[in-house]
Length: 249
Ligand code: PGA
Image 1: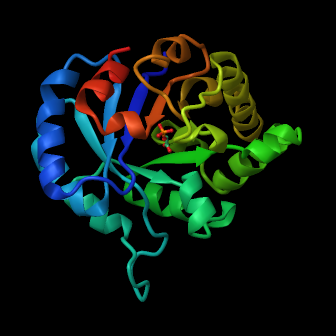
Image 2: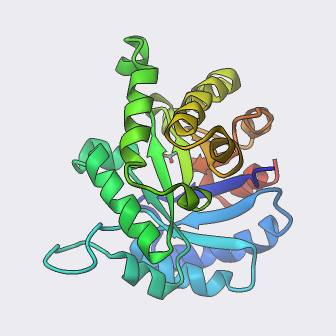
């Protein structure tokens, strides 16, 4: 019912030359993918990625967007600038941005609103730290992050929003949440959306990905879970063969 979506998050990797090589290798490998395929690249690679993927089943996303339309925000990029390049998706609130760049639940919400207003599709990242999990705070943290991220977002926008559940302790660590833990935690997010909107919309409209050391070895088991609608892939998205194995799970 919900179309699976698997997105690569390249983070701060790949020059334009490396992007050309990776995308060219990727195109034939992912053409029969089971999921909707997205690659989220650094700003400087977006134009190249969009150009190379024209007419293919790969969509391109950015890794952040500013909430203002324009103005005195040195170093920032607006939704209009991304749209002009042909970008479809945008990652918002990744834990690395929350951890190193002062991203808060409020700025996440502001970015989501700006993206939606221009027709970009947000991939909103939420997830608990190890300390929060060990302290029994998973539900509290996810309910808060989800509620704040969706503040003042209309129900009819939900079909254009993807949520990525990324436990911070599983990102880039090689530690994956077990399929059961990922599924149960994603259920908390979906239940929160059901309370904020309706059970029907939460069930039918919002796709929720798992992210955190997802790779060719564990993808099948994770994707078999009823609540998991896809993945946000860091490390394994940087190698064409690995990423193609993930999207064809
Ligand atoms: P990882 O990163 O797959 O390398 O753990 C996932 C992410 O940060 O989106």
